[in-house]
Length: 108
Image (cartoon, rainbow, N blue to C red; front, side, top):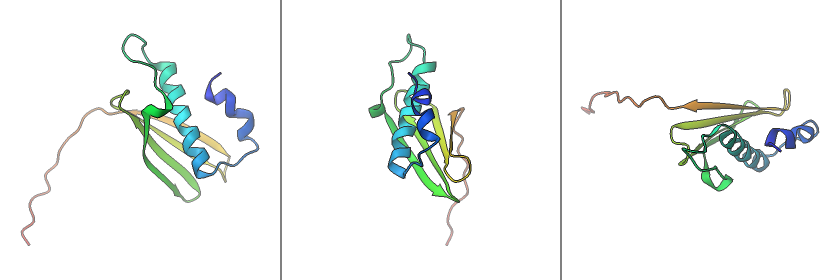
């Protein structure tokens, strides 16, 4: 059973606190990666293999960004809107490249 199927009935009645949201987000990332991974190219991802690299609550919306050493170049952004619709959104991003811009030197 996927995480979405597991939590769907619960989310309609429960507001998540920060710890519950973080734990649920990790499970959603694991489920998303393992559903779409190529078994010949990568091992399954576990909750222990993901890292929350950014977590914030602003204007009533929780957001976090998760990465994993196993899924190099992928980032997951999870948004939880408890006050509006009590929904969670999962966006997956792939790093295309890294570009350095020099802003000059400090002459002061």
